[in-house]
Length: 274
Image 1: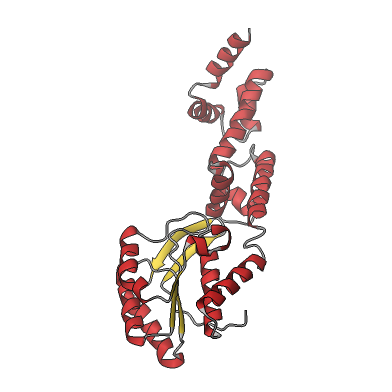
Image 2: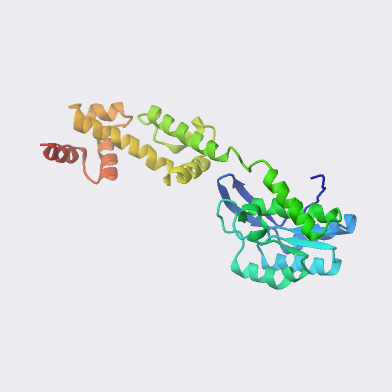
């Protein structure tokens, strides 16, 4: 939109398109130093407030803005991320309501956003667009209208994020189908797909609600069951073909997965079939 912005960071996130894993909230004195450094140098007249997760940071931001008195302060009260992660505690939001909101020119609500979607990323883009409009001398109504138009016309956020997760999940299943008889370690599959084990776990949990290890185990167990119920292959041979170090190791693994030994499972299956 042609605007120029400077930032004071309040929280560092560990995140990707699947969600936020962790936060590191900066101390209030560090936030104050950032704010005062920017204000002393540039004296911005429009301030957009984003993520505030600590009560003392809320107090600091409110104190600096009370003393500085910019022409416009904009706040979008979003409590969750685009993926549904809780960002702000009720106690912190109560401090925001009491200390920050009375200072604001514009407090955006769910109804202000196109399609009424109050996600963290979308609301921040919208609030930033309002800030640009106000910095040009537009009225609040004009700035909000321009922001709505911008958001409607902007490219979709993370357009390929869903397909990336689905693609990676399918590649993982394909890799399991090819290597389950040799590798049961999640790290092997993560390396094969050039991602971290943690990210692979995020993908499988999001797509299937399961861990990578459970998917590998299910495939391997299904293959053992097939051998037990459809062939007369000796268990020692099955163990060797499926990458177990011994028949005893296979038996322990199978009992853990099914609750019975391979021999008991085979007898039960045979009796049921008969």
